Image (tube, rainbow, N blue to C red; front, side, top):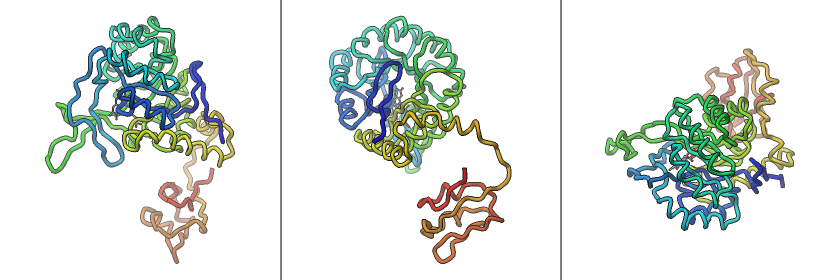
Length: 363
Ligand SMILES: Cc1cc2nc3c(=O)[nH]c(=O)nc-3n(C[C@H](O)[C@H](O)[C@H](O)COP(=O)(O)O)c2cc1C
């Protein structure tokens, strides 16, 4: 078994797979279920000074992803203070309390939630792209409490590295990237109406569709900002955790996968990541952190074709490679792929389509 424990901002976490603010952590009971499901921390739903009034419908599964137009918590902060946080705290897991949005809001809320908080996570989703309101909210949090301040960035028009640098300058202790992406639009063709009940019909994209964006943002921030980065966006399997760590994340959060698969998904993802590490000869998840950055630094960009390596034994003759090879370089003959390396342009597509792993890219 590999060591999946992580330490971030002086807090020890039993594993690096945590819920992200959203329905899976909407109240104390939901957070208890995440803890039972194997999460390595609890990050509570963003709370603000007023309960949110959320339009309906506000969630939809779409091909490759998920749309939502939820806001922050509909539960008043008083109920969080009287009931919900105590339930989360009783699980024994570190509790990071989600708060939003302005400096005034944070000045009001942070001291009140402090007795329950191992850390605060400030959402910057509704305070625009000018960094000043975010920086003021961070400063207000730093003045109000002694626990680490995690700052969650939204991939709007915003330049994420500049936003993370501004957060660091204002005193943030860790960066959380990314929030859902948008605005986006989904349509129900039967009614002609948007899937989301918001006035504009817009919603925010999450799930597998945003994982490449999240990986890119995490890597860029890790390169330029000397703070731990928590990777969020499309994590639903152990391999996603591995990839997030490879680009430099110190932990991950997930929301959509927990909505769609239930809270037991946390333990499942931890077990999958553990298995991957074991199979690849790593003792600890920390050993792969930043691996992609190190590999990229050594890599020469090539403009000539290097064909994939074909392990015929593994080929099932499914033809996915043949169908999508635009260079006519791969054909299935007698249920096995045959590669014409002279015709191959080295584009790599067949490798990513090969389900049994018969095609691999050389290093
Ligand atoms: C229904 C829903 C509600 C959300 N509510 C919040 C929230 O209150 N605060 C916040 O910072 N992010 C919120 N998010 C964003 C998630 O925490 C997360 O950043 C995003 O969905 C990307 O991760 P995922 O692909 O694992 O879902 C919400 C996402 C969804 C889908």
